[in-house]
Image 1: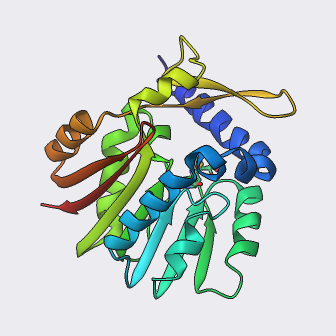
Image 2: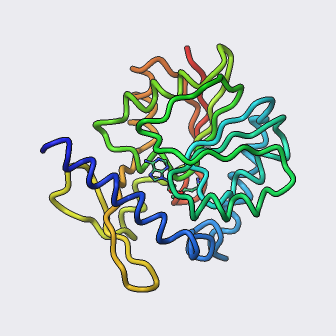
Length: 222
Ligand SMILES: C[S@@+](CC[C@H](N)C(=O)[O-])C[C@H]1O[C@@H](n2cnc3c(N)ncnc32)[C@H](O)[C@@H]1O
């Protein structure tokens, strides 16, 4: 399929999160009662990996994790393509040393290096065609002994998603409370497959699962 079809899907993914921003916090699984325990476990794992120094968060959204990172970091730079989500994030981290950047992560380049790079619920939105370039970007963002911490969803999540067949990358159909529907990329990595793919790109990856839905991964460049 042509690159323009993939570009169209990625643009729709941004449009989806821009439109969803106002209802994101109420509809994100980690904020629902059923997954409150998962959030606590993911947060504890993130804190065990001791975010420190200059932190970069990719696809920060409404800032559910930005606020947690800011409690540990010297500074947080948080990047997202949705200005509506960034506006919510800005209110959430008011007074903290957080610098918000509106940018498309498929074209954004870092101006400095960071001690810690974090992203949650983002890796599964990176299409396979952009996977290697995305990880090259992550490497470019890191100091030589910097670390990465990733939170995302496990393949079992496919049972609660609505697949969108015939797309230029694995994708799902998401509906807002208004009934408006969008396509979004959704690549559900199994821990073994992800460890192997990242190993081939020069990363050492330590992955653990939380319940049926989530995994967290801690990475270093080899
Ligand atoms: C599932 S949300 C995750 C938000 C946040 N990390 C969290 O865990 O709550 C995905 C985020 O990716 C952002 N996003 C989608 N496409 C993007 C792109 N091309 N560049 C930057 N951000 C993008 C969306 O605006 C949205 O905030």
